[in-house]
Image (cartoon, rainbow over all chains, first blue to last red; front, side, top):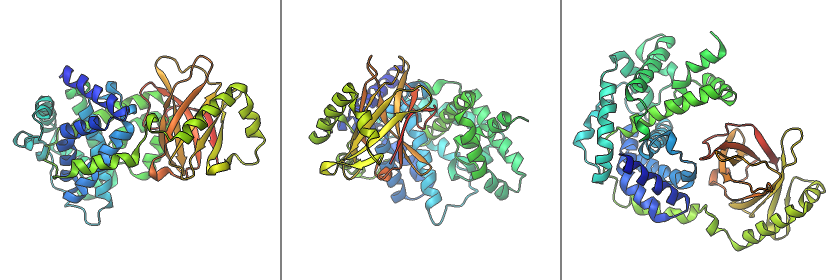
Length: 190
Length: 226
């Protein structure tokens, strides 16, 4: 995992030096992850493709600002992809059904092979830990976090959808993230 | 409950981008002056990234790789791709800054942004705060696509810091890149303007961690506007 992180850091440095082939390597390693995030959040292949293009353009422009001490490259790209996908989802005229539980998408990861075996090998153990931590959350916390994470719904939208007081929604999401952080520790920076 | 405690309770929602707009604005304002909350936010964003990175990958459609690669020339952002006329402008600017003439020239101009011969646009930046002697100028091509910044009089950012240029358009800010200064306080930067920031309103420079920041985390040390 350490070598994986070093290789990824070196890749980002090459991208910061405007080496196009380094971006191609980054795409071949993480394109499946980025496209998958866009597809699962938006539910639309064409929009997911736009999201992926946007994410890799951001990586090209922002490689110099990547900080290894603030997370692995997969984590950095994953967060950018999730945020871009949520932006795209909010811009879509018809949003997917908002109340479906989406954490099963994490659980399915073992059944879906990445285009790059190295990507799968490097991420699978950590992904398992994340999935286990999510599975252990109380159902109420998991549902509220799911609506925020996968649907980009605001606190007040979630409160209305679930028929809960706003304060309850805020505390459930906060407690869920706190619990995940406690369980996952700092392992994501490796 | 103090403001700090109240905002700290909203940081998770901010990291997930799921706050209502009023709360979001309150958090943004608080973050500007609270290092503890900025540190907490960085940790929460890491958790958001971890959740995303645990999602199942999907084989991307054929052709996406080439579509991404073919877009690269249009977003070139690197010094070795700088057009010759901007390279020449940078060299001249740095030489002028060394002689201390640019500040006098800038102050003689009626407008802070001025269209020079050949269609190039210049903008002045001055140090913020009492006692700052920093100054600089930027030359942009006529379409606002790219430019060159040269500064003088900035203190060393230290081994762990870098100066970061920001483009300001309305309420939005985008990074224009990182730069260092030499022992004489000189620094320069080739700027690639993102498409949605062409026609930006103002520029500012902040001191940031070595790897740069996604948004300004420090006070502006230099500013300039059109």
